[in-house]
Length: 136
Image (tube, rainbow, N blue to C red; front, side):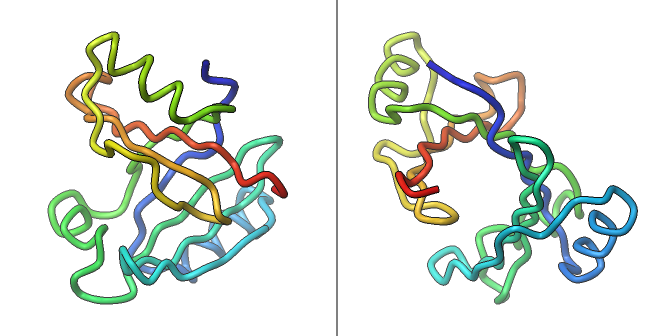
């Protein structure tokens, strides 16, 4: 079962400018920043209530988000929902005919476990499942 929105992911090409926008114009506080070497991303979480805005910026030319930015430009990338049991939620959705991009959970920001769904089955919205790390 999905519990709440974890974060809204926004692809950016100028991370510092995007951080300044969300901090100064919307009053959101930067709560976490990390580099994910595998996908080549710098990730920032800005707090808003119980949820976050996640900014994703490439740190190298072959970064996972680079193709998206080249095709679509900066903007909304995905919506992420919290689940307590990501494997059970993945199995439930697959049983209901949803197509998964990830067949196994992978590591996400702050040590969470994540998996993405194919957007063609979610109203063309890239959807992420998130099981937060136990200590977050």
